[in-house]
Length: 155
Image (cartoon, rainbow, N blue to C red; front, side):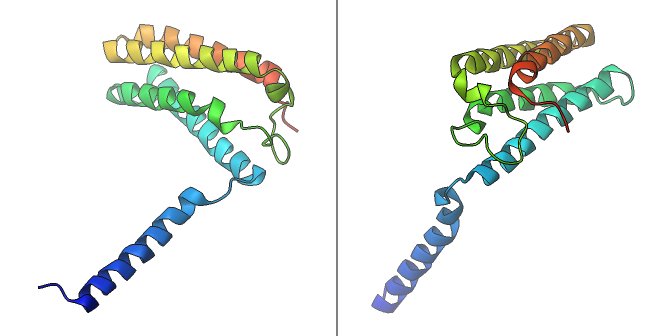
């Protein structure tokens, strides 16, 4: 049987849980946090590409992982435009102002990246490592097509 005290206890616990778990979702995104997040996403892109490269070079025999890495790259490609919101170009970032000044060109470069990851997924799903290698080459070109106009050099 439900008691007033039991219902009140449940309501308080529910409100507490909502406050605890909702806090990260409602936290304001400042430029430094966005830049930090963006760097993590881009580092993951590099790690997945490096992992596929290690398989293709024969450094490891985990060819069964290639399709999963390809899908992770495709997922990251779908996040790319989102992680460059206006106001996130100031601070410890290599992002050039051209991203926001030439947003349509940036979106085109992101679309090329997305298309390249889609083709990589198709190649990886086929199991044909030669096709994966060719798709990785195209993916690398798509990365350069964004990095050259929109990313500052190191140092």
